[in-house]
Amino acid sequence: MSDYKTEIGKRISYLRELNGLTQENLAELLDCSVKHVSCSERGASLFSVEKFLFLSDYFSCSLDYILKGADPSDVTSSIPTCMVEILQGNDEKERDLLMNYLNMYARIRKAGEPHNDENE
Image (cartoon, rainbow, N blue to C red; front, side, top):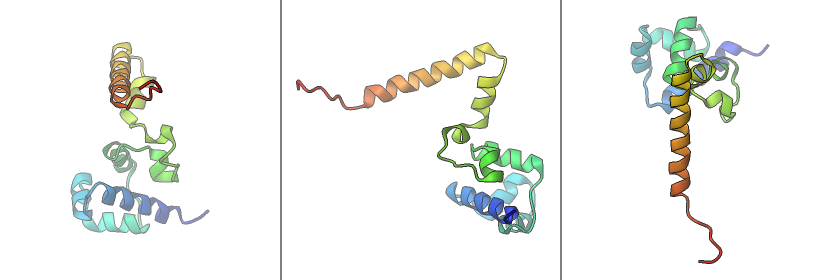
């Protein structure tokens, strides 16, 4: 197995930088030391499960991406965890609300697309 800790650390560093955070900012969010963030990003240590879960939620990415490097362009790995939980959950009202929101978004997006009428 390749050095999985280093690969995890690179992904965390990438997500941190992508979101405009310094190691100090991330340490504050995670309630840990800057040294721990630095060590984790270099692959010298790992975060706790709770901190990985926080990172997944905070960066709206899957644990599969953080831990295994699953392709972030894969739609299923880029859906925020909270949306997946709603869609898989038993709360029909919450699921309907999310679906209505997504349908509304699709209508708005379609309305903003240029028309391709050949008769114009």
